[in-house]
Length: 332
Ligand code: AQP
Image (cartoon, rainbow, N blue to C red; front, side):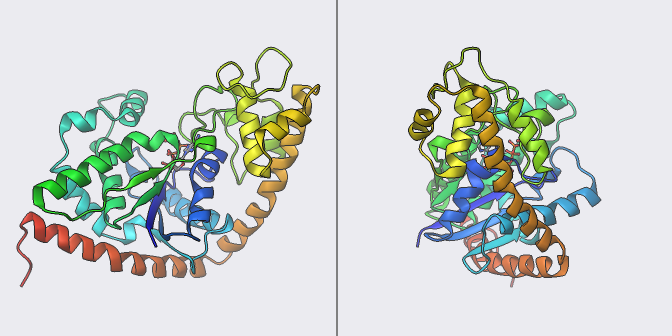
């Protein structure tokens, strides 16, 4: 079976529809076809400031949501990044073969550091994509299911794998991004040209899986749409309607063409009202299942400990090889 790895940051009390449709939904399908490793990347979550108690809570909430949307610990390895010390260990090695200029070109760093003020942005935020490369390369992943925003980081990961391999001998699998085009960029409901984002969207622009469903419904009904009345799929000229159709199609399994056909002659309000119902029905069971997992934190922690153990089985062997190739003396 080919190997897959992906991660998600515990930087909010809920994932949003972009995280789910762009990435996590594909994690669930890929656990059936791949040897799958998925992690809650808490080391990444401290790069832009955090509160310890909030982080602890969010790691559990993240894991519970992943289980609630369908990850099955029998079919995949689910773990918390900080439970596997090989991640920062390999990241250090990769830091040493990453160019300063190369890292400076990462657009996510440029955007986030500009928002925080370049002087205040941490070195951790700067080397974030290198840690991400370590996450992936440790598992010799063939594929990495992510949203479009991660394409550049994946390119860096591939470059680092190839560079290490040519400097020190074949060590890492060069991974390919797995980006599902239709849902690769779910956009902000209030600014349909920007991606739906935990850190940049306004609360009205983002649908959280765990928020009060009535709130989600209201946000959809107030989503920014375009002038005009026709419901057609035209991301260029009608990005708001295109985004709503994308979400609608993804959550129901109906084709966009089929939706467009059935809304011929209807108004934006009709589409929004129906989509609001679809979203409410979609999140309700997820919320219930998330609560069930959170009701038993000891059991949840146990699942994560088992996941970490399985992950270390792979990551420790890769790290040992990488350390050896790079010329570190093995401890006697
Ligand atoms: N709007 C989106 N559309 C499609 N995919 C998306 N992803 C994020 N936003 C969208 C994908 O979700 C996965 C988890 O990402 P993350 O934990 O790195 O979250 P993130 O990128 O921090 O999420 P946000 O909301 O975009 O937060 P900020 O703005 O803080 O960076 C990834 O695979 C990502 O591609």
